[in-house]
Image 1 (cartoon, rainbow, N blue to C red):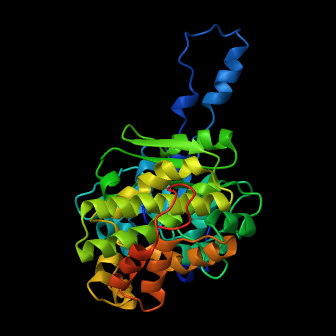
Image 2 (image 1 turned 90 degrees about the vertical axis):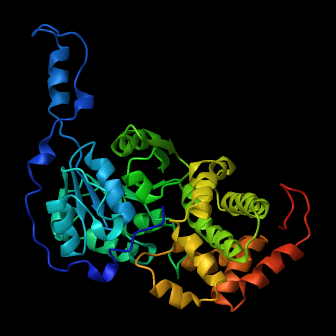
Image 3 (image 1 turned 135 degrees about the vertical axis):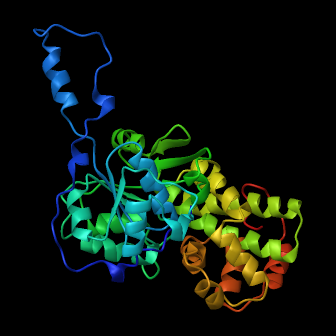
Length: 391
């Protein structure tokens, strides 16, 4: 899902107060309890069982109060103690008192009673056994810098961001490595429209981390009966797929505004998968990742869902609106707007022809029209489906 915008870096509190994280941090982990037949008191395994059952569940702290951050927090809260840091006092009160995030998820979506929200950044930082970053790409580094002042060493950081940092062109895991060295960094991504997941529709995501043992343990925190979480070690591929698909969703949105047919949409999406995997492989990602949940799966839902912010941007561009006007009318970020120019810089760096991304960048940043964009694609000569360089 596209990233939340409730938490810009400039709004991270500079005051720091340490609070008690609450008794929920001491809940025992059911998964660590033995299901075997009781042993005698003298059995040496009893000591190990007692030690295992005495371990508390990890405290998950989600930073960000937008739609996807809140949805992930609600998933984690069904598995164990979870605290959500939000900038808005009104949102925190809504979550704590009404078990709703009405601003981003509406009044119909009920959140778990075990989910608690706070405006106190220090409380969140000091409680965390696992950090989940639900802030947008432009605020990501600033929040991490504040976090670095208080977060304990080695706490894993899982990003929900499907974007790249403008100016540095860095992926979010690279920023974590730079600002919080030693903290394991990963990303959770997939075809996840927040509202649908929050309403309980079945969905899936992939958790990418270099350490697969750690990934397997953390994945349990993001699993419910209706939300399946897979694992991979291809952090580069998953992060790039998440950033790239937003740009291609804008292209399909532009097509909707032009009235293109279903066949045309399918063609653009299929060629988009090829462009995505081409750049992803050049950067060190795995081709198979782009045919999976983070690639093709997320691309399909972001291109076709009426709830997709990036598709919405494309449709509005096709209606003749200026990009600044479109952004100003939205209460959450469409990461593809910022990613378009970054992706073209990568294309130049690796010597790749990326026609769809080029045309989207032309409309967003260089004054081209959506008609110009689709005419530009039509002018591309088709070649080999896999090894050809064009559209």
